[in-house]
Length: 336
Image 1: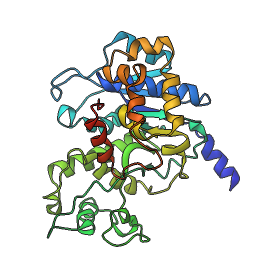
Image 2: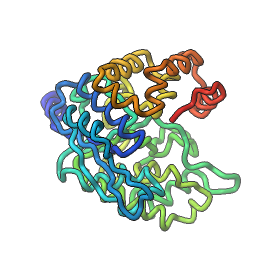
Image 3: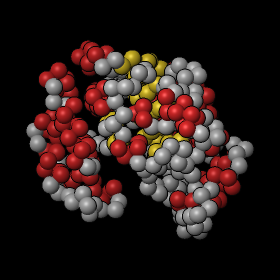
Image 4: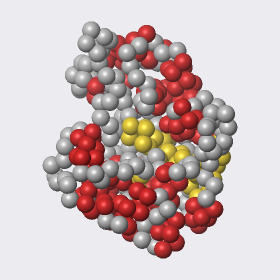
C-alpha cells in the first residue's frame, strides 16, 4: 500500500491556468511567482491557456503586453492558445471548459483559477488522477430552491438522468435529504484529472447541453454564472471521481489558497497568505509589471489591503461571502 501511495505521489502532472488581457494576466504572474517560490520541486509544465480573438469576443482577449509575456516566460510558463467555440464573451467562465481541449492529451493535469496562490509543495499532494476531484470550498449557491418548485433531489436527478449517470451513487447519505451538501457540488476553482482532452470533452458536452437544452426541472434556475459548477460534478462522477479524492487541508489549505479577489484575500485569509502575496509581489521585476493594474497597485503597494484587513476579525468572519463584500464596499475599499 505504501508503494502505491508513493507511486501516486510522484506521478508527473501539468498545471494549467487561464490567462487573458486584463485582471487575469496579472493574477497569472502572481500564481506563477508563488508556484516557483513555494514549490521548487514541481517539474511539470505550467501552461497558461489563452483565448484567442474570434467572433465570440467583442474585444481581443489574448495577452498582448510584452512585459507580461516576458515575465510569464521567465517563470517557465508556456502560453497555450485556444479558440472559443461555445462560450467566449457571453460566458467567460467557459474558458476553463474550452481550454482543456488544447492541452497535452493523456497527460495528468491540475487546473487552478488564476486568483490562486501556491503556499507549499504541490508535489506533496497525493493526486489520484484516475479519480478526479475538485474544490469543496463551496457554499450552497445552486440550485436556488423556489417555493412550490422542484427540490434539490428532483433538480439534480434530472441532470444525472439526462446524461445517463447513476444519481444515487453520487449522494452523501450522511447528509439529510434536501440539504445541499447531500448532493455532489464543487467550486470550479481547482479540479484535476488524468487527461485534459477527455475531461474537457465531457465538460463541454455537458455544459453546452445544459445551457441549450436544460431539463424542465431547471426552468427557474439561473445558469449564469453557475453553469461550470453545475456541469463539473457530473463530469467528475462520470469519470469515476467524487468527494475527498485527495486528503483535506492541502488544496484550499496548506498548499493553495483560492482568494478570488484581492479585497477578499485581505479580508479573510490567514496571515501566511498575505505574507506570501506581498513577498512574491515585492521584487522590482514583478512590481513594475503588475502595478499597472489599479487594484494590485492600491491593494498591495499603497496599503489599501491593510485597511480592508483591519475591518475584519479572521476568527469571527461573517458566515456568507456576500456579507464580507458588502462591508468592504460600504467602507469604499472594493476593487476588482
